[in-house]
Image (cartoon, rainbow, N blue to C red; front, side):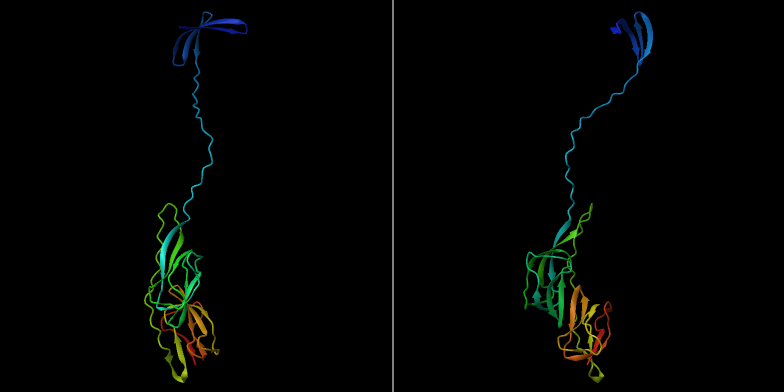
Length: 241
């Protein structure tokens, strides 16, 4: 038994707690018994938290760095080199021009990157698959997945030898496509006079722009192609007289 004394508004009370079972208590106040119900209060736990500081954002890598060698797609002679070691280039930038099969072939960057080494210079003769440039490029990374390796520059099949222009009656010659590709630009029209070395058209093949030039002074009699057209090797492009 526990006894307590209280003073409320100047009046004194003697309280005896006789028994407590669960939430019911038997008490006496100044000798008068009472049965009271005790209201339980849930304990609220307080967690002291430190104020959050600034959390640095998680930055996923922007790009995956890969190195690759840009090789000569076919034998030829280097006409001009437009980049140097350490230079940043964008996808589609012209890296160099080489002459092969009497055509000017523009070698372009296939993606953004940095030129690490240049192995050739103007006037140098190269064979197919000779390394021209060491190139370090970048490619967007894939979140939550391993970055896919960038495919190495596809090695084109050996370029076919330039067929001799077919001679036909009337002194005309057919200018044929030396390799399969897509016509980017036609620079001449029927009836136009051209000089040896004049640009006739530009053909895209093996991811390169190939300028097809006139082999002699002549007159364009017929144009058989137009921009956007796909041609195969030996398709007739022009009739020249």
